[in-house]
Length: 341
Image (cartoon, rainbow, N blue to C red; front, top):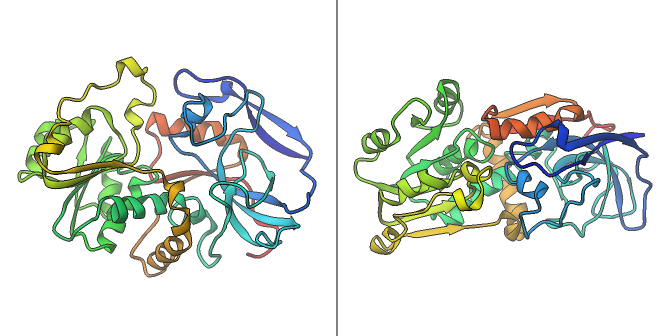
C-alpha cells in the first residue's frame, strides 16, 4: 500500500490541509510501455494554487478526488519502458503520492538526472527551477555584463538561483528583493546577490532610487503587481523585463489586481517585456541540465534548499510559499532510493 494526497476542495485563499485528503491505496501495477517509480522528493511551486483552482490552460484540470498534481524526483523500480529503466533517477510528473505509474507521453517527458549530485537538486538547481532561471536570463532577458539587474521574489525557488546563474552568464551586479532580515541575509551570504532590498522593512521607492540611480537594465520578475509597475517606470533604454511569475496577485480576485500606469514606458524606452513557459523549452532540457550540473560541481551555483521530511508535510510545504516562510527551493523528502543511484 502507499499514501497519496487527493484534492478535496478548491481553495479561495491560501491552501491548507483542509483542501486535501490523505488516503491509502495500492501501489500501481506495471503496464505495457510504462514504469512504476518510487517517489523520493516532491516539489511545490506557487502556480500549484492555480492548478487547484483550474485557472490554467497549460495543465489538465484536476478533478476533486484526484491525486494532487506535482513533479518530483523518483526512482524506477519496475519498467516496461526502455527510456525509464529500473534504478534510474528521473524527474517526472508523479503527483503527491509515494509511488506512480508514468510513461514518456507526459509534457515535459520524464528526464534522467545526474546521480553524482544530491538527488534533491533534481527538484531545483538541475531541474525546472534552475532551467527556468537559465532560460529566463539567457533566452528571454539576453543578459549582458553591463546590466544592472533587479530580481523580485529573490529568495524563492527560481529567484534563489538567478544571481549566481546571471553571474555565470557574465553579469556583474545583481540586486534582489525579499521580505524580512533573515531572507535578505541569506540572499547576500548564500545566493550571490550584491545588494538586497527588504520590502517589509524598507521604503521601496527610496531603496530603488538609491540602488538604481541610473535606471534598471534587466528585471527578472517573480512578483508582478505594483512592484512590476514601479519598475516599468524606471527602465532604461532597451531594457528587458522577464515575466516569470506574479505571486503577489495569485490570492487576489481579478477585478482587484493592480491596474498598470507605466506600461507605455516600454514603447518610450524601446524596451521588451516577455513572459515564458518553461515547458516550451523542453528540447533544451538536456543541455541546460548539463550546464547547471557543471556549475554546481564547480561551485559556481550553490543551491539553497528548504526540505521537510515525510509526504504528510506536503500541504504545509505548499502553504509556506504563500505565507513567505520558505528560503530557496521548497520541497519534501518522501523516501530514500531502494537501489544505489
